[in-house]
Amino acid sequence: MTLDELASSVFVSRYHFCRIFGKATGVTPGRYLAAVRMFEAKRLLLTTSLRVADIVCSVGYSSTGTFTTRFTSTVGLTPTQYRDPDVRALLVSMAPDLLRLPSSGTLRDAGVELASPAVHCGGTVVVAAELPPAVGPVQVLAGIYPQRIPQCAPVAYRYGEMAGRGWITIAGVPAGRWHVWAVAGQVNGPRQWLLSGRSASPVVVRPGQTTRAEVRFRELSPSDVPVALSLAPLRNRSLGVQAPRLVRAVARGDPTAVVFVPAMAARNAYCP
Image 1: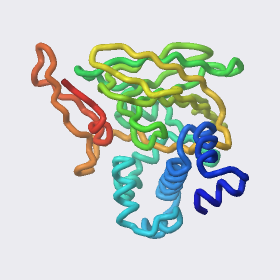
Image 2 (image 1 turned 180 degrees about the horizontal axis):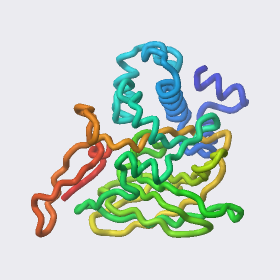
Image 3 (image 1 turned 60 degrees about the vertical axis):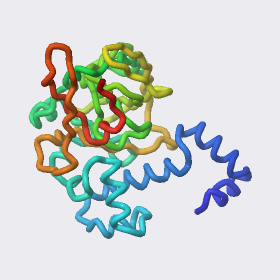
Image 4 (image 1 turned 45 degrees about the vertical axis):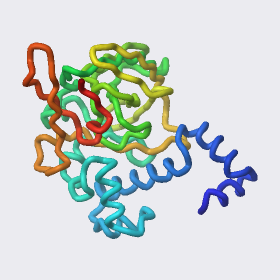
């Protein structure tokens, strides 16, 4: 369906449709559709044995090469690499048919720390988080992402437990313009449920400074864009050019300091 057809189906102009769609979802119709396609491709890669070529057709792409390029640049892994068992085990997903949040024990067993390492040229983001009143202590993952709709691993994060209202401090955030997205829920027991929240606007992080953001958790709504990303530590796997990029930070008293920045994030990060 074209944008004109979508707009005419609700009896408005395409320009008014784009405005009200963006107000309801936070993204344009084109980016929304791209995110839905990318999520479905991830789901099929993780839950089926379909060939990549078959998945390409089923999610609306006509060229395997175009899809692979788009997937790799957005996610930081090729479609084949995304089928690694570590990716599945450390999946964070917020969608009606795929709710996932790895436990702290799972992260530790996989060699993933519960907080991002310090970055000498980075800053700190302090997130004021609020859970619904009826929600007790839950596991919370708050992360910093280059896109409003998270597609790759966070450039910085914090995993822990909270209840009610609280502050989540995320250190080691590379300087740049980022989005805050957090997920909270029950990961142990027979029933798993999740809530999510995001900052209303991007946060600008500067070296050595603290930036504040606010997140209110809520249940998934029909208009939410599905999210799926993995916390798998890329540096522990042979992923060629998709492994985290080494960025040398000129730190005071430690000119040899090296900072690990995911390949997708390195384009947005600035280290003086």
